[in-house]
Image (cartoon, rainbow, N blue to C red; front, side, top):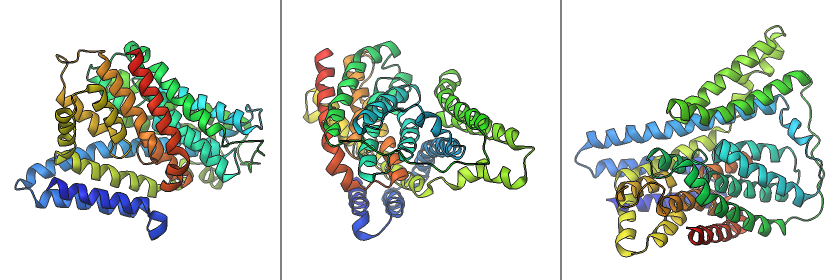
Length: 419
């Protein structure tokens, strides 16, 4: 039965990859794949109540990610509506493509550790679309954003979902993960940066953005700094309250919504509506969110049926080398969601075997966090960027995957040497 589900998943994956050839949006394929995986699972199970219970658990996890994504996109769209990104653009004084790539890479790497890789990818991808007019240059830069967001998130307890899982599970410590993974993460960023840098030459002409004339400089500054501050507040909220990240994101949306209402309460209704959160919500890319939902449901079916646990078990049984096992887990995270893979590994090994702060856990955080960059749909950051800029699967494989693989290999080797 699990192999039937895996076959459906693989076929769905193939149709997603061939989106442009078959002229079928990837969101439709992902939704069909996700539902069919669960249909197959329940039809081959004698305990339908248990399957429904598993489904509701998965939907809860998926909903948390989707609410987080919707909230982050809403805040970014609202900042954009108020021309907030122009504040950053005005501080970028270069017109050289390689220098811009360096600035974007550093910002993505550092922001990801403070925010998380998903939020960083949304913010930095949206910023890049406001700067670069040439599509090829823009896509190459966004590819680097995905890599840097994932590598930056790997060395921070709040930078990636899987790293947070290991942190909450007491497998890693804040200082320990930074000490063990920071340098490998830098290496995993520098290598693809050098690779992609040679693909970018010359200078670029900055996009001349059409300004929102109904917004003044004071309002622009308030919304920009409030929005960024609230995004940074989300991981702090999670650390203090221990509630899921989407709760902090929803609180952030509510606060920013209130700020916009206060700013425009005395203006004409037409102006209020144009610069309100409703306009920002209309700009959100819902197909990308539905695509994300379908993929997560499909992977959830693999997890519920025990397929991912079996896969992890086979690896552990057949490969008598923990470094190789974790490295392969990182590679698999470019195809399957890294969250259930890491959850399976957490269930297989306890703290008696590998105590808190052991190299095994730190290395798992690195590999699961950075391996997803190899394919565009291998990480939340990649899926978000894919939706914002409509990056095709094959284009990413052809232009970014090699850089990501080289960075992953170099970072992994560095982690092993240091560890």
